[in-house]
Length: 369
Ligand SMILES: NC(=O)c1ccc[n+]([C@@H]2O[C@H](COP(=O)([O-])OP(=O)(O)OC[C@H]3O[C@@H](n4cnc5c(N)ncnc54)[C@H](OP(=O)(O)O)[C@@H]3O)[C@@H](O)[C@H]2O)c1
Image (cartoon, rainbow, N blue to C red; front, side):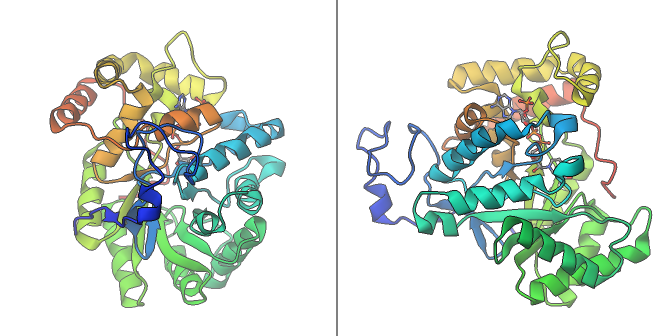
């Protein structure tokens, strides 16, 4: 199935924009930024849900080890969240495993707090879709244990229902018997109305077909498949997964669309982030020159920025990217990935440059075939 943008045009919202089309009037419910942005009513369907063509990822919100999170960042993260929601973003990705050490669950907790304290229109707040992921921990061996994990996430966020409940990874590679219990857990949380829709993450083409068929037989539609998908991560598997998603009506959510930050163009061999990312980037970035050059060239020609082009590529491939954001500035910039499209020639140029770049992202160890 090919997805199209669900376009509703409430005239009340159209009238919020000025005729010159380059500024927002003060009556607009979507504040703080100038056009161009996507039209806020242009939502994409994910199962029964309507979400913005891009969501934001919150892995960094609570992660000290990889992302250098500190609690002092919370107020900026709240402003980041508010800015996103005020500008029409309604999809936020999180997981019950996000947050390191004593901060475990911090990403979900922060999201819940930010939703509660959001001061904008109630209607806008009610339309926020949280996609959380339940880790396939070895001690989650029964459907009931996965349902309890879902209830714990609801409690951390203090919300009544989760938008998309996703299985974080498949255990097919190392504990196949656990897999069925986890799938039954997804069915149970859906039937209990704890989640509006279910999805999976890090599933390869074969496992994706299996889980889709299993859930379908139980009367549960699989609405999304989240995988690493970016100009740094476009192997045969990604394309096969995309084709399967299209044929089965599953929405592909692309995680790490900025290659953990490498596709922003801000890191170089002499300017690496601290911690484990620095080590990883030092091995990949030297092999990214053709791709980064193309990204820069297109960005300059289109008067966009490098991250905007990298995210727009994911959108043009028919996926929903969920770039991670740590600051208002990054959210503001990434919002500029919406409201325009790369041409087919530009897409080809980028993909050609990606192929010519020896640097590639390592795949998630939990990714199955
Ligand atoms: N299902 C899974 O297994 C899985 C795995 C990974 C991620 N995810 C999800 O996908 C989301 C996104 O992936 P990701 O966070 O791994 O990587 P990403 O989106 O590729 O990169 C995000 C990082 O890039 C930097 N950045 C973002 N926008 C920027 C901008 N405009 N200018 C400069 N720097 C910018 C920020 O880090 P710095 O400022 O520190 O560089 C940010 O944290 C996650 O938050 C998570 O929700 C899921």
